[in-house]
Amino acid sequence: MKKYIVMTLMLGLSLTSCNMDKFFELDRLEVTPWQNVNDLEYMVVSPYTAHFQIPGWQSPLALISYYGELAADIALANPWSIEQEALYWYPRQMSTFDVTGEQLESSFKILYGAVGTCNVPLTFIEEREDAGLPVFDYMTEDDKKVLERQKGELYFMRAYSYWMISRIFMPPYNEVNNSKRFIPLITKLDPTQEALRNPYMGTVAEVYDFMISDLKKAKNFLPDTNKRGRANKYAASAFLMRIYWLMGNTTEALNECNFIIKNGVEDNPYFDLTEEPIRAFNRNAEPLYTTNPLAKEVLWEAAITAEGANQPIALARMSKAGGYNFNSAAGSYSPDDLNWTGGLRGQNFQHGSWACAYWNPRIIKYIGWSTTDNPLDLQNYVPSDEALKDKRFVQLHAFLKGNNGDSGASKEEYEQTFPHMKWNTFWSDKNFRAPYARYTNVPIVRLSEIYLTRASLLLASNAEQARKDVNVIRKRAGLPDLLSVTEEDIEKERIKELGFEANDRLTYLVAMKKSIDGTKMSLDAIDLSSDTNNPMTGTPIRALNPPYSEMYVPLPSIEYLYSGSSPTIQ
Image 1 (tube, rainbow, N blue to C red):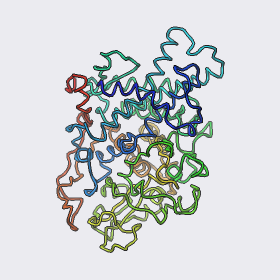
Image 2 (image 1 turned 60 degrees about the vertical axis):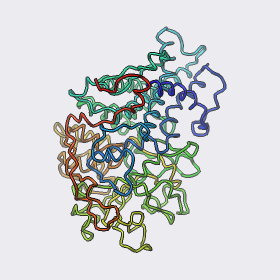
Image 3 (image 1 turned 180 degrees about the horizontal axis):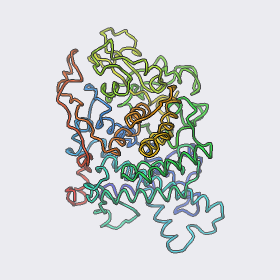
Image 4 (image 1 turned 90 degrees about the vertical axis):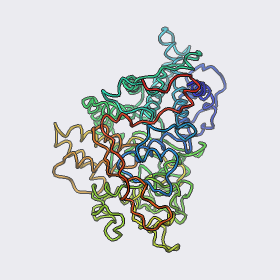
């Protein structure tokens, strides 16, 4: 592991000099080591920069979401654009290949770079505190409050980094997998040769316990609200909810749901679901490109800025739009403009040539957005009346008819980028939706997820409250209340609400210990030069069943070359 462990130390220092001054409203660092909380703030900014401002195609935020949609049952793969690691993810062969030289190797570096930028200041802080010393001399009461917030953000971002690592580089938490070691668990700065060459390999259980420990500290230290794009107390609680749910600790997961809804919604007006569904997805960070950059339902998001080197462009692989192919032509940069809330994309829209993951027709029929799951039935595989009444479909997803051979046909109505795609398709259209599309804010946690998770957790003990939670979501979508709910009802609402977003579908299936179905077809029956393909034929891809022990991507083999250790999982 020497290669990237050394790089994390370098990255922790280099990221502080990135040109993020305008966004984070800080002065450039002039004195090292840190002499006060103002100096330390540059290290607090660094993990955000690592995750959200420099990754481009290697963005963990985008790649791991893309991985989740392809490996789960929600998406089919467009055979004309599937590439790189997706060739293994889609047929669910993720544990059988080497990511060295692939984009995930770069994601691995980004993720451990973010861990390193947290470990450096946290080790400094903890060593001072453990010795009974003030972190900085002559600290005022205001300085102490700032330091608490800074510690909260660093603990949160370290936990978030390990959350992302755990979602891709190790299998889920359960009795079968928990004692196995998959990833380095680096909890402090240790520059010794031994630590650099052979970092401690944590078990699945140890990694989850460490994330919980960090998130509890973060929840304690973080403020209720923070600067745009920065972590707050409710974001920490939401990740605790996710982790407890995946661990099967439903009591603690429910406690976190209740904490967020009571303290962040009912007792304080921090979050609500009063805005249109599109509002979470059509905002830019810079005031130049938006009249109001905040969305009332977003607990935490990646505020992508033009000052960063690149946006999470890999999201284009699971979207109707290509990030490079669209900017505002609507004559307004306001997210209140009906051109945006209505979903219109302007004259220069182009379906991205990277678009790979699109809606599985079986899932579309299951949730009621079409009456058939046959995409070649051009008459009936179209948006249902139920879909057209649902604001989530109208504002956040898109339907394209198969290419009709007319190069002049509307690209808003017919597939034009992939002319051999003759079947009808439903696409996610959540990404690149702001007026300045390349730098659209990306929601990571939304309030709707909290309500839907609580509904699943409460169903057995309080079905009436579960029904109310689901109807809160349906009301915002413009739909009538359900008079009763089953887990199937909750699941359908969750797919419609959170599909193609933050790896949620895979999280739900694993948390509920469901089979990830074996009815999805491989691409072996597709002839890339033919106009007569049927995406619903081919060899079925094997199901993924609990305990999901093969549902992980191995570390880059180059890591074992540098460390001299064996890649064998213990």
